[in-house]
Each structure stands twice: as C-alpha cells, then as structure tokens.
Length: 393
Image (tube, rainbow, N blue to C red):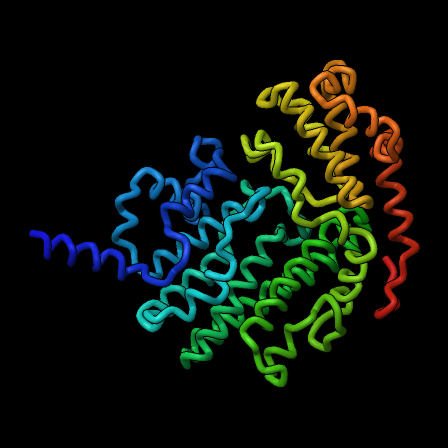
C-alpha cells in the first residue's frame, strides 16, 4: 500500500517537474490581482474567451491540476498571463512562457501542441481584461500591450522550433509574427491618416512596448544577428527597416517624447487593492486617464474611504514620476465626480498629505480642463518632427 502511494506521488510530481510556480499557486495569484474573473463579471463564452473559462474551470476543480502535462501547464500559464497583463500586478510567468518551458526536458513530446496554442492565442479576445487599447477604425483591429506578451512568447516558440528543427511550424510562427507587426504598422498609419492625434498618442506607447518585448526575447534567445528573420523584425521602433513604413520609427520617437514616463509599472496604484474589485477599474494608457478617473469617482463599488485611498496613490505616483500627468487627470476627474469633492475626500487622508498636495504643482495642474489638456498635446504633436525620419504628424 505504501509503495503504491509513493509511486502515485512520484508520478504526479514528475509530470510537472522543473516548471516553476505550481499551477494552484498561480491561480491564487490570478485571483489576487483579478478577483472579478471568478465572480461572474466577465463574459467567458465563445472560442476566443476560452482562456478565461479555463481558469474558472480549474479554480473550481483544483484536483484536475494533478493530471496536467507540460503543454497544459503552458496553456494555463498563458491563460493566467493574458487574464492579468492589463491588471496592476500581472502574474510572474514571463520567463516561463518565453523561454524556460520551451527548454524543458520533455519539450519534444509537447512542442507541437505548445506551438499551436501559441498561434491560437494571437486571436484570443482580451478586450474585457485590459483598458490599454487602441483601434484601427478601417479594419476594426485592436492593439494593446497584450500583443507584446504574445510577440514575446511567439518569438520564443519560433526559436525553440528552429532549435528542434520543426521547420514548417517555425515558418507558421514566423508568418503570424509578421502578420502582427503588419497589423500594428497599419494601425499607426491609419491613425495618422485619420488625424486622430489623441489615439495616435495612445497607440505609440503600446507599439513601443510590444516591439520592446519582442526585442528583449530575441536577445534572450541569442538569435543570430545575421539571420534574415532577425534583421526583418529587430528594433522596429528604433531603426529604419526597408520592410516597413518609417511610421514605426516615428511612433517610437513619439512615445519617447510624449508617453514613456506615463506608462510604467504603476507601483503606487498597486497599493489601493480596491482597484482590483472590477475590470472597469483597469488602468488605461497614460496620460489620457480622464474617463478612468470619472469612472472611479462615480462607482458605487468604491466607498468614500477607498476613493480617498486612490487619491493618495495618485499623488504618490506623481511624486515618483513628476511627468506622469495621467495621475493628475485621473485625480481631477475622480474628485469632480464625488459628492463634496476634495472636501469630502480629505477627511480620509492624512493631514500632512493633504497640506502637501494643496501646495503642489499636482494640484495646480489639476485645474486644467480635459479639452485644454488634450488641445495642448495635439499642438505639441503637430510641432514635433522625428529626428530620424523627419516625419511630422
């Protein structure tokens, strides 16, 4: 009897040996940062949202995790990261899905399945789990930081497929990577043609993030710099490339000029855990956070004490990053949508913080209206000339 129990235990452990975080712990991390996923708030129906439903299934059936293999574990990691990449605390499985699992001792048994899952994940519907999005009005396509996550996994998969001589699948993966790059190129071109200044400024940091993720994993896998595919997709937001419109480099420079200090890890916003209550509280692309602030101010899901805590986090975030104007926009619009405004909120904030806030540039800049703020950005974008491409908006 003891021998059979030991054998069973060994078999269960061997199935996931060397994969890092245990899947049940991973689910706990997802619930910590995105509890709304398990409370029926999201629509998890349809093929493209099955990644959400998979997490809900395993949360209800934890014993099923004892029977998963490497490919299923990889799938769960993707589901977890897709579900939380737009939250304040994404799951920490980046290196697992980009590299470690592709170098696992049992990879040859599962590599084709994992590659197909990766290709399929390109079209997963993540719209409910991020507010960092931009659209191509002509083709009804969307871009967010999720594409950066996807590109980083896809290029890791490509490198593994090349390493293990899965030539056809490697080419399939390369084709989808190129399709994603083309999609982002078309979004930037269309937004410029539409003269959509604000959405272009929203999209530029998304593109820069996505191509930055791609570059990092190419370096991580030590891709051959002389390889034709490497040359075609490396440093697209930084260097001119004959395969693409110079709009990519222009967009990268626009991000550096206008948005790079706005869209970081938002460490201060991790403190108010009330922001994790609902998907409607997910943070958008900075600095255009006016509507988000209004949503927070109007919400019945947040108490006045919680709204005050968010105000404190806005001020803390601004002090950490003085040109993070998005926090000011969020603050202004939250306060405007609370009965009693700042007078009501300051009762729940430390006296010294309120005093410091009232004397600060943060408070002075919050007096600027949304229209004035956006008009100023439009004018600045019009005047900006890219030093590499000589393109202007």
